[in-house]
Amino acid sequence: MRFDHPVGRGYAAGVVPVSHAAAFALAAFIIIVIPGPNVLFAIGRALALGRRSAILSVAGTVAGSLVPLLAVALGLGAVLTASAALFLIVKIAGAAYLIYLGIATIRHRKKLVAALSAEVPDADAKRVLRQGFVVGATNPKTMVFFGAVLPQFTAPESGSLPAQLLVLGLIFLVIQALSDGLWALLAATARTWFARSPRRLEAIGSTGGLMIIGVGTSVAFSGTN
Image 1 (cartoon, rainbow, N blue to C red):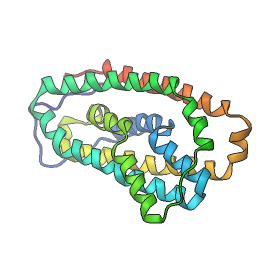
Image 2 (cartoon, rainbow, N blue to C red):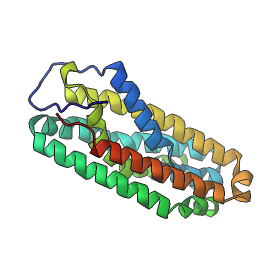
Image 3 (cartoon, rainbow, N blue to C red):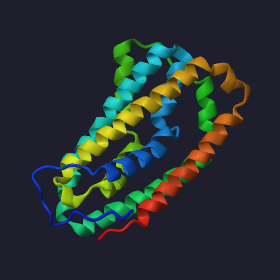
């Protein structure tokens, strides 16, 4: 798929083509389903405090993910529209960081195992939500994905770039809520299964890291004009 650059084009309203939205949903799913800070936090809550706290944690992280989304859609989107050079810099920097993040995921896959024994202090609903919000708002994987990958799936001829970024971002958040929620529920109901074979989580981390590297490489070599 070719991703055109939006410089020099402005429209009143933005509609993301179905093909772009579908391709983005696939890329987002690959990134989201891989255990990262949000998932580790939810797993820790699920294992220590049960389903309720796990679901509240997911709600908090999804809400927190709105922070980088709005920053990109309302700020970076306008800047990228006016600067082809900055668009290229952001793309290359983001692709490089995604590759780095993939390598780091492989190297630190044992952290998934550590989550099994993590002790999380008791917390009420507001505290769990607040902590989840902070985790979501500061998740580097989400920041990089919104900043570097999100713009690649916009269609300049379809309208406003910020509006398209918001639409794509909302697709991301829906997938995030479903995927992270499933991880949390699995952790809450399958603790014994995970505990019997920590290598299962390590394998997930390794595979996930390779997939992140693949997404980063794809972004680096996507067309820009």
